[in-house]
Length: 208
Length: 293
Image (cartoon, rainbow over all chains, first blue to last red; front, side):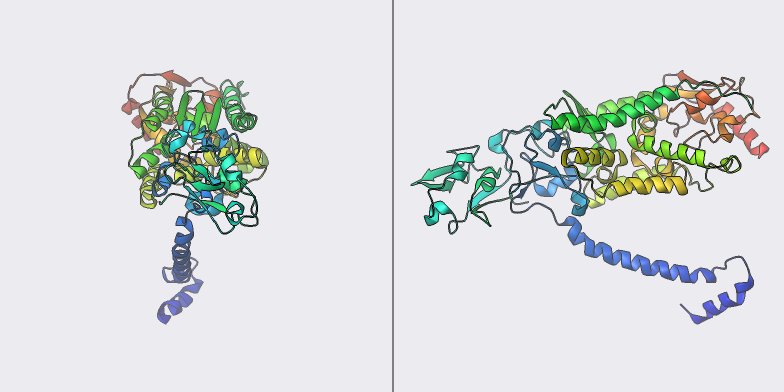
């Protein structure tokens, strides 16, 4: 701020009415605050737009493409309320714009494809599709750590739990194999996998 | 002072409000025990096969996703029809935020001394048409951001979501702080400030209901002009002047508090189908108002 203006305000300090000049300081503070806010916003955008969807973190079955999900979901939470397994969780305020949207953490409670949620979605964010078209993602087996592959045990936990057994996961010479065309990525196999600490099977969501 | 008449409408209204709030507790509880006949909260409510969706969130969802989902369009109809016929009754009869605000308001009224109660209607008032700017701005911002913003911060939605979260998971999210902030803002600064000036859903419902059938009408012949009880007691939560015919305005929510209050029976709920407000009388009353002050 030019020095003259602050001098002028000092000269008029005896006047009880605020002069335009005496308001300069708050205005500068305001500008500084606005600058900080703008910085916070630009820094926050990455966080705000960074979706919660990722490996083993999936949208419920029948969801529209991830890039359309935020635009479509009205965050009414009915999918979470009808989910009998409590698989679907409503995201909290730490998730930026994704607050209030549904997410499934397959490592905690996977989806078992009962398809109750798609029947209650009013917004079209979850389309009423049959279980075979849930389209939540695709499972991948880490052959290095999988017991059936590395010969630790005759494990077939993922095969046994799969809701689309013999379609999405097949056994070939006692080893599980994912059928990419049939797997819908419900994540039941992730939860069932006994390999610790990192499971030998994971689900990646579809491309946004 | 004239003995207050026995309240006629308010007990019913308060019952409906409390039941609406209890519904938000009952639904997650029933869902938790495996009964899914009722689902959701006031962003979208499922009553068996009848689906209801909040008009503003639905509108924003349709606009941002550019997809006309028939189910959503049909689910918008019940609240829209309700607002078309009865006006903004959701705000005063159902919204849990409205109930909390009114409770805070009543607490404040009791805390204030008689002297200060005269200035109960806060000095801080925004222009009423702020509401329309908020509605348009909110929709535009939603389009810019690409998601239905009101579905994030809708106070009735947050209350429903938090109650469901509390019942399902036993935890509370930070969103309740927003509700608390609104209550503090309304308590300390602007009376019913959020509901009156800043709620885009209320704005949309009011706009839909501007030609509503149910109105609070002033019987000018019965009104004792000097009484001003409907104004002195600062009864109207919405800062309206029922004695000037503002019960028929776009901002009235048909709560009926002024109808209960008027000792001369000059205010009534009337049922008029699409009849416009007689402009002459209103102008006359307004002229008188400006002369008096």
